[in-house]
Length: 200
Image (cartoon, rainbow, N blue to C red; front, top):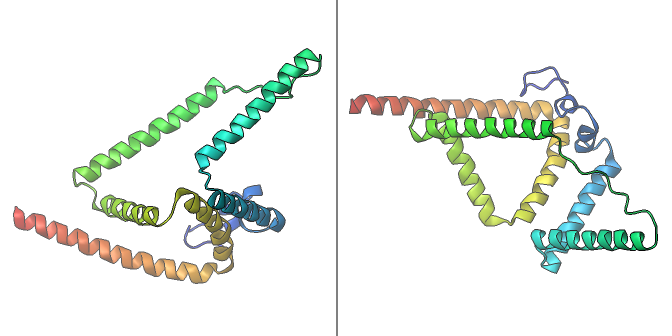
């Protein structure tokens, strides 16, 4: 079944990459997907009940891990045993260059868009930015980072399979919503042109 939102004759599975991750997101590996949800729910409940923050939990886990590895290595040296089987941790220069190129491109694109918005050149981008920032502000005032992370995971594991199942109906509603948004944008754009013309 083709996806009319993406205007490509590809299935939702193909759009999501068609591999292992797509299988998990679309519940084609039910046991694994359910396991991820249960483990994440258990972690969230643990954080909520214990009062741990993510930062303190991560810090304690690393403290315990490095203490165990350090003592293991020291005792192995004394007892003439093999040290802990750790992989060689190394970041290649090529990986660093690729990451820096990507970050550089993203920053420049963001700065260019910010300049266009600040100087009033792009009304569409300004409206999108306002909607995104207001949404983030409202959501951030209602929930903690941990709750948002869990909700995001639940959405990632429920929205794609629901869309795959009810693709045609969702596409119809999406087209109607896009049409209404385009009409609203045109009205705003025309009113801003009329306002500029009156000033001049």
